[in-house]
Length: 108
Length: 113
Image (cartoon, rainbow over all chains, first blue to last red; front, side, top):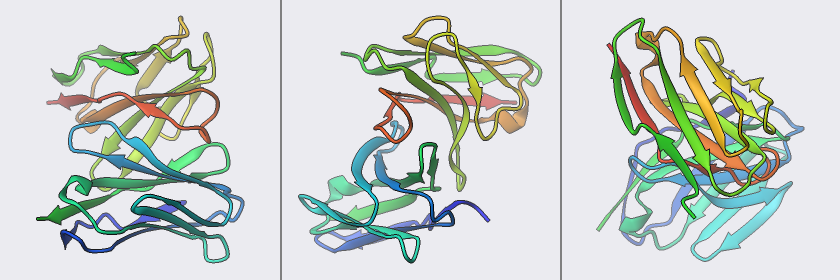
């Protein structure tokens, strides 16, 4: 079993939809949770960063951590075609483990 | 600031050939990393360095060697390339450990035939 599991998709939604991206993890000691966004043929860029449990909001993006279920989510409200990218979760306690990435396409 | 740069951007090798990938960062970061990215596998850590002159193995180190002779540069070497090493290679750097934001380069697409 991988330490971090992420549904690779692909996920296709119409513009304006609410998108939910998810990861699960196996080690309850993990305290650091990140979401990276990767555009096609580019390197990943940090999008959201949370420590421990709870929610964090940044504009149209909300990161949610449920440590009791070992489950994290990234919500995108009012999705735009410019949000089309691969989203990778990174979870760990110092050494970060990356998920496989979910490819998202937002259609105009 | 250029951030993290990688050389070359593309390369095709024959099985058994060797090559070196160069990563450079101008952010004065202590930590540097080499990852490979394959479809369905995500980013897997090959080697990393916590400072000039230090290196350590990551998740998938076999077939690769690294060196960090200067703080700003991190080299990844393939001594005898194999088709299984066909991948996209990313270099990253961070100010401290992995819990801090990692800044990634644009990647090197390597094909081994």
